Image (tube, rainbow, N blue to C red; front, side, top):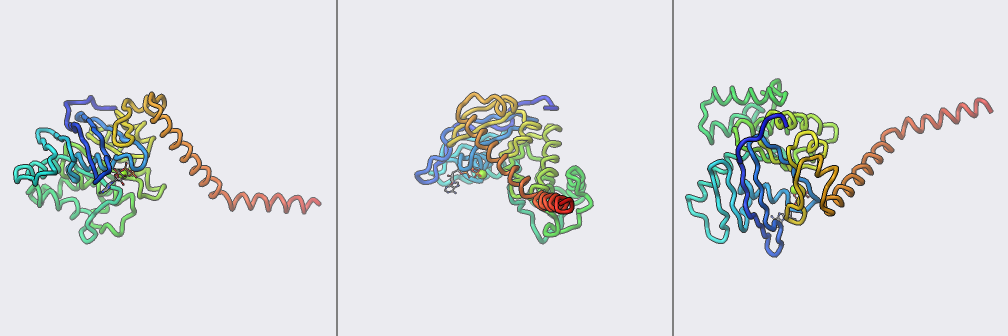
Length: 291
Ligand SMILES: Nc1ncnc2c1ncn2[C@@H]1O[C@H](COP(=O)(O)OP(=O)(O)OP(=O)(O)O)[C@@H](O)[C@H]1O
Ligand SMILES: [Mg+2]
């Protein structure tokens, strides 16, 4: 943590979500303070994405309420929402920028075009000012030289960094990240994580669903472990990752670390196959030469 935490910016209270008979979120309470970075971890299907989507009402919770700054929306999906509530949801979404695995850039617009579209159309920012803001954030993510390029010609890591710049141009109160690096080739993960770490250290308020434990360790003020739609445990990253108190957190981390080290072993075994074979051949050659 580099910036002292401020007042509470995001409150999600009593969030429950049913998909038909499936009780996916079972009463989640979450408060996030200004400048705080919260990492959310948990196994597949535990409800992490659903929670993020409920926070910005891309998905309406079955029960609960969400407040971001001074905008509060109470979930009430059984009644058709009033015009006033729809307006509150629109405002809530403006306060929360969402980043997905897939970058959702407009392919037919340049990088700069992608970054000025929403500020101009939604926030009615004048074009010159929108361009200035977009250039500032493209510089921040290290992509100002790509401003006139089209997204299909960018790498996955570059696309995700543009998506981050685009979200920042709306100057949201909180950024919600849903596994922003999980669709990337491993060698492109680092450049996106670095941008996110920098944002965290500068005090951007962020909620980040991630499997990148190193990001949680390096950049999160707090890590939350979710299982079966409830927050099982939360605390500083060192405590959650190194000294979890709940058996369910321990089990998750044990499995996660062992499957990760399997993957690393497999990659290591695969990568040097050719040199290893060469070494065997060289050894054989040498022994034959001597024999
Ligand atoms: N629109 C939907 N309709 C029905 N079921 C859904 C829907 N969205 C999610 N679910 C179910 O809700 C549960 C939680 O899903 P969610 O995507 O929130 O999990 P997650 O923790 O994000 O998992 P992952 O790590 O795989 O992304 C899963 O059982 C999923 O199948
Ligand atoms: Mg998910």
